[in-house]
Amino acid sequence: MKIKTKSMMRKGKAFGIAFTVYVLTYAVSYAQDGNAGINEATTRVRSYFDTGTQLMYAIGAVLGLVGAVKVYQKWNAGEPDTGKVAASWFGSCVFLVIVATVLRSFFGM
Image (cartoon, rainbow, N blue to C red; front, side, top):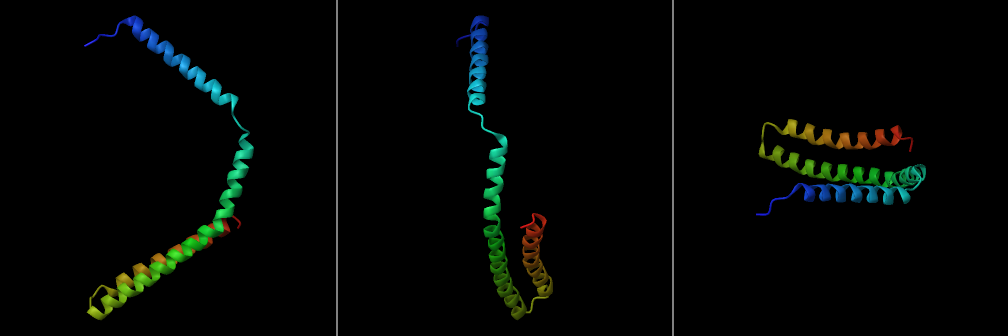
């Protein structure tokens, strides 16, 4: 095994410091305006918001259909916890619809 000497360790530290300074100066020289980036991100997120809301409604509809089939099967089987399962599936669907509506009103869309 090779043992590192103090001079090798100093050279490594010096190289690390020099590399860090180089990377930082390179990054700073190509920095952009922060406000323009934030405005662009806001515009893009707002453009996807309606699509995301429609996706949440669609997921709620699919969950509602799956839940209805599951509750129907439990009801026909005569299981005693049918009411609890129905309430949980219905609650999850209502939650998705309410969240989509509240987010839309909260962000003023």
